[in-house]
Length: 244
Image (cartoon, rainbow, N blue to C red; front, side, top):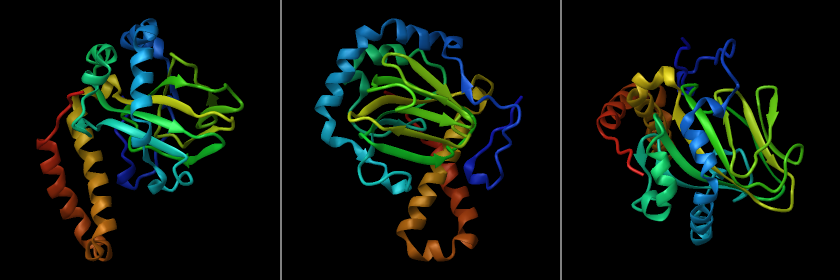
């Protein structure tokens, strides 16, 4: 069994024996959504149209320029990210998502024309990062994703699963935008550790925000980081809300 790896650990990710891409056909829920794609396509497109100006830039992570890569997030590591619920805007999709074991994150990801997301690693190897194509202007080589040494393109209404602990990048070299659903789903072997995994990653993000906003913490982070992490971890472990 693989060991849980966290980017916050400072340890090098041991890629040997770990899968880069996963087969969506191994997940019955994924095939169920694909088979009912025409039932959910309209409500997703309506949501994107209504919330187009509310997508949030991801430029803060330094992997893209300006607002060229942006997201609209409903669920962040088992914590609901907004008052609006997906079940109220996309009830058909939400019905199918309720059948997904280990679903901990859900967002819409928009990549502007002629945009590249630079190579990076995700938070952990404990999840399958799942992309569902919504608006896909082209396939490879013009629009796609590379994880490790492998490349794959998106297709509308189809899933792409990968291990984002591997260094990965994405690009859209077309004249139209690309939009996908992004979900993090705990890998089956790690499901018993789901709550700990989510608490660990949320804590890491909260600590980074505190470091960036409170200068004294930033200056003394090597002395304060461990106790700060422990305190926030306990709080975030006790508090979670997975409702979509």
